[in-house]
Length: 171
Image (tube, rainbow, N blue to C red; front, side, top):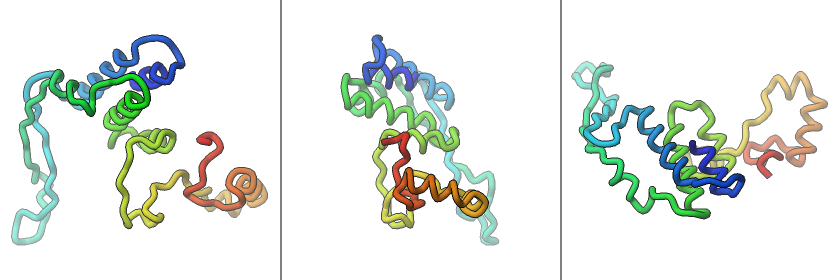
């Protein structure tokens, strides 16, 4: 639904992008077991030891009851769809939320393609406070296919196997 909403927002077809945007959010919420209205119980794991022995209790969860109301959620100015660039950003943000933590690298690939959502990064990235734009070629390519590895670097990245290089498909 989010892909269709994005395409409609970009003008690639004619239909109502908001309809697909809403359907995407609702499908995402349903996949997480979040009701349209009612109470949702969220579980948060606390990894701190619960005994004097220092052993972590694997069942150490905190629960929180959250009142859910679809209309209240969607009526928030930061969530509600609007036509144009702002609407596209909201589609991509909701898509990221839908994929977060259970879609492998797809959320990263989508971020890399669009730059949405905007992340705050810190020194822990070991990359000048940036999120890498690509993976380096594996050692097996560098050592076992050196000639083609070098050709690929020259043609795509100016000869540098830099994790911040922009792939041709993203240019």
